Length: 309
Image (cartoon, rainbow, N blue to C red; front, side, top):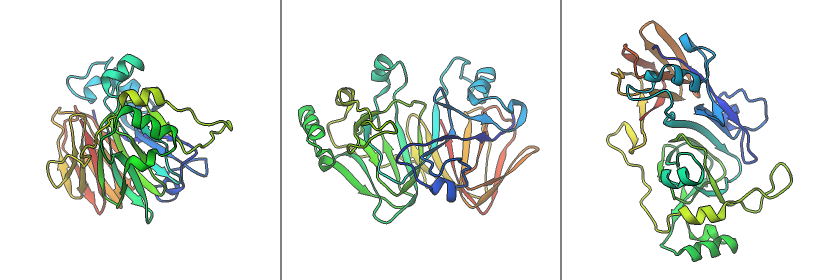
């Protein structure tokens, strides 16, 4: 099958900002936009295909009908493996943790969540929380949550554009204010909210916390969360996914080794594959199916992230 583009799914949460609208060209009907799900085949968000033989189908419908676009081994009833989001935080996100696959299947009937962050833009002084400063006990973690001192024991990292972070399941983490990033993750939307600064939701009530489950899954030891990588282009390589940062010119053939998802993060790229040609501006995407028989080429003055299994 030939490559096609995907329509993003927009998510608006109370911490969202304006950067995705003003700097990334997202046509949200709201004044702020928290997340743009660029690659999603999930009950909480499903991209619509904009081109080709699958035009107007959702990504979920397409991969069920044509599983070979994911990989030769993919079956119609399999879960699509990955999600790719753009996230903009005007305000800090809640401190949260994601379960591993085993815990999530038992308690949520879903996959767990391993993810990575690539920092696209940041305001001066912007930071993230990622893991613990030192080893603690479960009771010490619970005390820190209840005493509103959780941030005192978390690893606070000031970020720069281009930084990449790996977040295994079980890692306490949060995005601070003034950060726009790409999040590449397993196809799961399971999040245990641990601490939310006492904020109220749209209904005027405190947002739900999931402390008991968070205590079950949280890693209580510090871990090196620097991004696993294999080469200059490959900025993230783990069991679940691979992320490359590419500047034009670039060419590749999928060779039935799995799909490629391309998102332009700077400038504009000219994408060509067989008789398909797209001008992909910053913030726009293209999906290259695993069974695509042609080599695809990226030219122009742009830069992009290429995600694969």
